[in-house]
Amino acid sequence: MIGVPPPRAQSRPGQAAPRLRAYSGGVSTSLLQATTELAGLIGAAAFRHFRRDVAVERKPDGSPVTIADREGEQLARAWLARHYPADGVLGEEFGATPGTSRRTWLLDPIDGTKTFVRGVPLWGSLVAVVEGATVVAGAAAFPAVAETIAAAIGEGCWHNQSRCRTSSVSALADGTVLTSDVNRFAGAPARAWTTLAAGAGVTRTWGDCYGYLLVATGRAEIMVDVGLNPWDIACFVPIVEEAGGSITDFTGKRYPPLENAIATNSALAAEALRCF
Image (cartoon, rainbow, N blue to C red):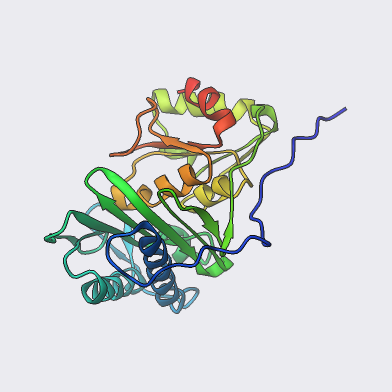
């Protein structure tokens, strides 16, 4: 008889999001609202170009970039200049702009550009706010699938305005394990991924940033990634942790910098790390 995994935690539509104060530039509830709004604005700007046969250029590192990436980041920088002029900005497309406060905003207008240009809807617009070495708030908008997720330290994780949590699945054999591209694993991480995937109930790719949302909302248990920049991963630190999960590198170290990452529910964190 096939075992049935325990129910996964889901967003709770009946629980309303907290009332958020207007931008005050210093409280976590304000940053929860601000990151959510900004990720949504970037996502909406990018979505106007989705499935519109946009031209694709190559950056010096060989990765693709489109007008949607650049417009999204320009819009975000203009928004931040109005609302948080003292803060620094670090974006994938236009680099670093120093600020005079202790805070820096990390921007990835389209995480998953390869996905975006192929018309696959699992790309996202990512925003994080970092103070020193701590990510205090983060949000990710997925306009092509009408989902948004956001969190701030001490304020919980919110999926489409409802509180969400990671799943309670405690057996890897019942779990869903995700990554973006198995061909990116090499050496020891490749062997570790093979071990992890072999023990899982379900293994899927096309993870990209959407994989972290699936973990935080209890629809998957583990997301594994390599070759990350700060703007790729920072927003998911509070998102996963405030949802009750764990997000570290392959040695168990927390952000920063997370050049590789493994995000899990709490029940499978230790077992997943043992594979690496």
